[in-house]
Amino acid sequence: MRSLKVISALLDYPEAELFEGRKALVEELRADPLLAQEQKEALIEFVDQLCTGDLMDAQENYVALFDRGRSLSLLLFEHVHGESRDRGQAMVDLMSVYEKQGFELDARELPDYLPLFLEFLSLRPEQEVRQWLADVSHILALVETRLHQRGSGYAVLFEALLAVAGVAVEREELQQKVANEARDDTPEAMDKVWEEEMVRFTENSAQDCGNNSVAQRRRELDVVKPLHVQPASPAVSSGTAGSH
Image (cartoon, rainbow, N blue to C red):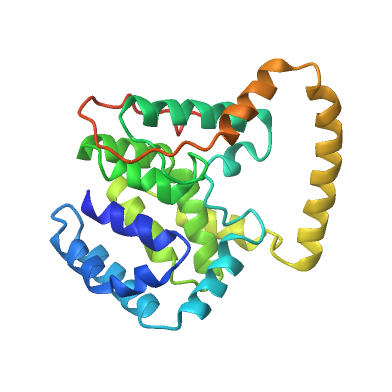
C-alpha cells in the first residue's frame, strides 16, 4: 500500500529531504485507492502542517514526543515486553521474517521500529497488510490515544493505520486508561527509569556470563547489515508481530 510508505516516512525523524518531498508525499496519498477519502484528507493536512513549518522545531517536537519516556515509543515490542529477554527473541524472529521475504536493512534500526515495519508492509499484499496491522492494533490504538492526550498531530497517522487494519477500538476505555497514567517524559520520571535500568543492567550482567544463548542473541541484534530493501513474492506467514 502506497500510503504506508508515506506514513513510514512521516513517523521517522524529520530531515530536510522529507520537507522537500512534501508534494510527492501528497501525490502518493491521493493516488492510493485503498485509503478512504477521510484518511487521505487528514494525512494531507498533517503533511502540509509538518513540512511547511520550521525543520528544527519539527525535530525538537519529534524528540520530545518519541524519544523521552517509553509511552510513545516507536519500538513495537517495547510496549509488550519492555526490556525483558522475550523482546530480544521477538526481534530475532521478526528479523527472520524480513529476511525470508527479501526485505533487508540498510540502517542500524531494530526490526520492531515502526517506520521500518511499515516500510516492510508497504511491499506486501493488501490482505497481509491488514492482518499484520490488526496484530499490532492494540499498540497502535494505545499510542494514538496518548498522542491525542498530548494534542499531537501525529495521532492522525495512527488513526489511518487503524482504519486500514479495520479494527474496532474501544476508545472510551483507552481514554480512561491513558487519563490515569502518570507521564513518563518528565525529568523525574526519566531519572527513575535510568536508575532502574542501571540496576537491571548490573544484575543481568552477572546472570548472562554463563548464558551463551542470550549472549548470542544480543550479538545478532548488534550486527550492522549493509543490505537493501527488495520486494519478494512469497507470502509472509502473519502473526509474528502480534504474538510477541
